[in-house]
Amino acid sequence: MMQPAQKSTREAFPLQKVVESDDVVGFVNRLDQVREILIEDRRYDQWSWGLLHFVAGYSAVNIFDFIFTGKIPPTNPITITKDEAPLAVAGAKNSAAENGAISIGKSLLEELVERKIEEKRSEVASKEEVKDEESASDSTVDEAAVRKNVVSRLLLCPAVDRELPMHLAAQSGGDIIMRRLLALESKELWGKKMVRSLQVMGKNADGQTPLHVAVEHVGAKRDLNFLAVLLQHGGKDALFLKDNDGCDIFTLAHAMTNRGAEIEALLLTEMKNIRASAGGVVEVVRKSNNEAKLLSPKISSASKAGA
Image (tube, rainbow, N blue to C red; front, top):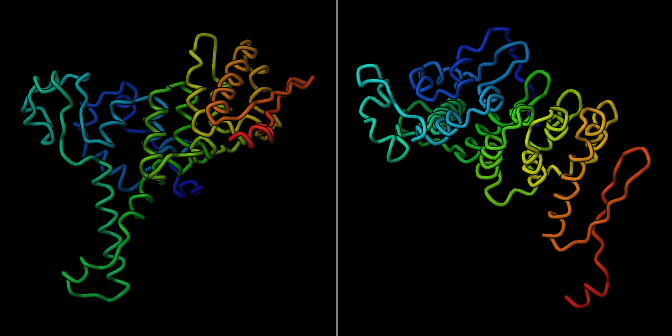
């Protein structure tokens, strides 16, 4: 996993209110500042959070979609006038928001990738002492690798407490933003079916994965479906990982909330569904000290013979 950002600042996040309210129009109106934050990978507050940490923590789905697709969702009507709007949306009409998402062209992700590719080309050209501008632009650069590095930096570069954006999404219980983060990883970093999410398996400074954090912050009223989202994308491998205090998910479920039995039932049921869909048989062994262990599926010789 990437190392935490080296430059930490206690500066307050300048887009706090915009991101907290998922105000995509306000976000668009401050694009120059947003670009600066992304390009320089600026970090804020004592935890050295990046932009995506805030977006994930506040479940700002509309802003997330804008960053990675360049579109303003129809659910966020534009009320600003043409004179007040930024150049990106100055020509867009309010009626367009009613019929579908408004696109401003390139997404911020595409802009960031293109900029990093140009920086890499300049670096390669400099090393090769290429002086001709045209030759420099043709310098060999693995654009796919640059793109992966940009996305990895956004998703997997931890804060000073080693928390990823996914940890913050898990803490807030935002299953929609969690799915967005997972879909981005699957598309950009794997390019095929994602077996085990790097985000879901990431550990913070306390040795906790997002699943540990999610269970700790369930609370009394929260729907538990967001736990299943993590399990379905590799979280099952985190079920019996212990944090720095020696607690696994089941121990935390019983120790941190009065919904321990409910959480345990959901986790084990979801695990059965996952294993059953793979054709296995699940055995769950409960121990007297409230710990659980999931044994590997057992497929009989007869089953193999009949396959």
